[in-house]
Structure formats: C-alpha cells, structure tokens
Image 1 (cartoon, rainbow, N blue to C red):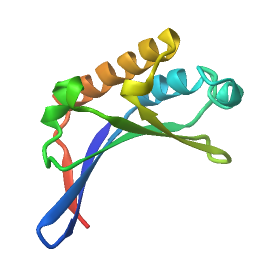
Image 2 (cartoon, one colour):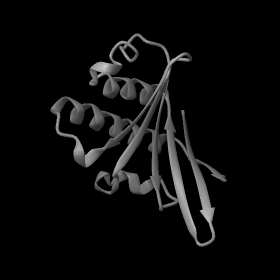
Image 3 (cartoon, rainbow, N blue to C red):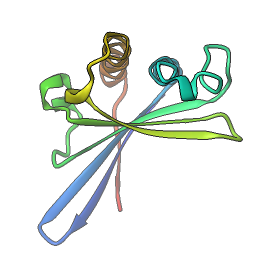
Image 4 (cartoon, helix red, strand yellow):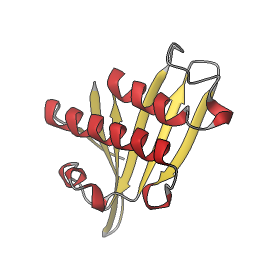
Length: 124
C-alpha cells in the first residue's frame, strides 16, 4: 500500500501527481476497467496484475481528495506484466450507471488508503 506525491516545478508553477497503489485499489481499477468490453478479458476478477490511480493537481496535499467535487480526472493504470491499460476517466462525463458505481467504489478505496497511509513526497 502506498501513496506517492511527485512535484513537478518550473519556476513559480508546481504540478503534483498523487499516485495511489494497493491491492484494494487494484481490485477496484480492474472492476472499473471491466465495464469496457475491450478490457474484460484482461481485467476479469481472477486476472493477476497491479493497478494504480494517479490524480494531477496544483495542490500539494492529497487531503483535498476527500471532497470528490474537486476531482476532475483520474488516470487509471493496470498491468499484468505482458499487457497494460492506461485510461483517463473524466468524472463529470460518466453517464453509465455501472461505470458510476465502479468509480465511486474506487474513490472510496482511495479515501480509505489516505486514512491509513502517509504519502511519500518526491520532488522531480
């Protein structure tokens, strides 16, 4: 289980990438990705692999994540060692109820991870 915050700065401008990774996150990333027919064979519940969620922000703290209305896009990554999937999810564009339920479960898993772990901070 880990949370990593990477700071990218150029002069007065800083962008932060908050990355969340755990077994629970992997399970919910696979659940969301399996709502796409294209990914179902790679992300079924018994498939091995690692999932990660990254949120880019101008805020250094991961705590604002607690307020889901401040989240715009989640970048999901899943890899089984041979194949990988990278999928951007714009939360305001989700219309399918199955996708909305899956992404809400993923957001709750991220909230739980934030409560259990202290983020690692890396300056790039």
